[in-house]
Image 1 (cartoon, rainbow, N blue to C red):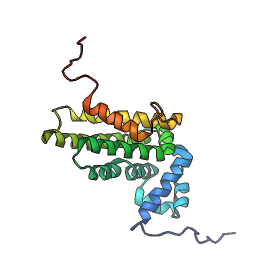
Image 2 (cartoon, helix red, strand yellow):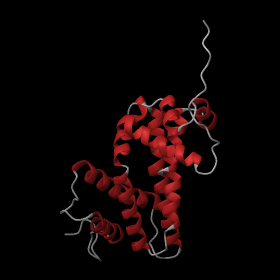
Image 3 (cartoon, one colour):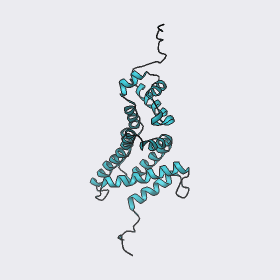
Image 4 (cartoon, helix red, strand yellow):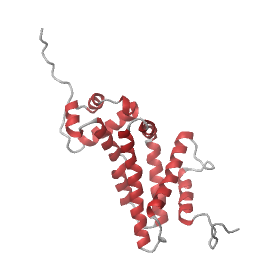
Length: 214
């Protein structure tokens, strides 16, 4: 007996306007809940209310969809938003970057922890996640280059300086999330960021002292 195909109950819509954003938001939730390995294209399509055919037509693969999620909720999109908020006041700008980054990292801590864990097993996850720190570093290095050119900062390796700044902020975010403690000294993140920025800008050597002097 030949069964008659039943009409699909999945409602599809063209990926225009907010539709693509909705799919990416839904995909982020599914990846966060299930992890990369256990997430299937079928579950992604079902959660987004589209068919697998539509998903493949617009994204090509699970790997591409994951990369699009990372880029939309981090990566170049977020780096661009943060860069647009910079005013040219170095101390204020760095504090703003630090506060925003920590807030975002804590809000998305669940998926970040899960993806960092899975990055060891899936090269495509590691590759997508690697775009975030690279784009943040490049964005901050461009900003520091402009400040050096304007005479507000001494000549320095801006890529290394950007890496040092984001390293402090990211390490703090991970510790706060893992330990559920606002370290150091129980201070709120805003105050910690202010200390980090002060250390980053002024260093810890007294003016006129040189490393190695007693």
